[in-house]
Image (cartoon, rainbow, N blue to C red):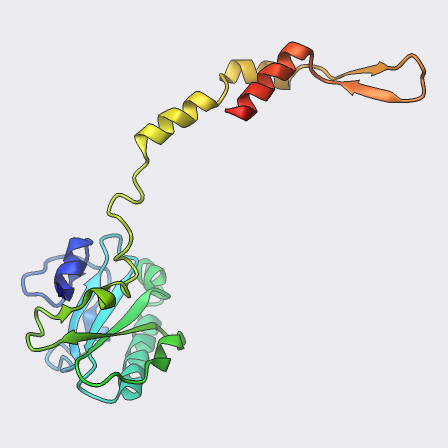
Length: 211
């Protein structure tokens, strides 16, 4: 079993509902709900480190799944309309996810295909401790970021070095590219045969392509 909240934090997400969070996120959570009336079903609001993904962690046991999705699609619609001119919300607009966790019988998951206002992901977990939700290995793979290595966007230095070795020297390449094209007519005069490179240059280009 894996702690759901720990997986978010391990991948650089911040829980905006966690006490002590002091970060200017560029929008107001009160556009989702009144500060003194946080919905019972809302457990966490996770924002990615790049501020381009927002996950609303919802308790799927609180109401029927379709009602829950409809309710939060309405809230998301209001949020995006009220903050539509803010740059961060323009980045988030199509990357707001309802992550719904249930612990009883498997609900109707057809809503996962409804992307009208937000993406929906419905997974099973142990909600005994809602601050530390336990989910199985077969459920955690549903998280879009789970299979992406932390260094996925970091250039591979070894591959960069190998690639540079395969690319011809700039001066050498430019000399061949700028060489005037010569047209040599066959003695028969019946055809025109273009001759762009001599044999040595052709072998050099062939060598680059074979690397």
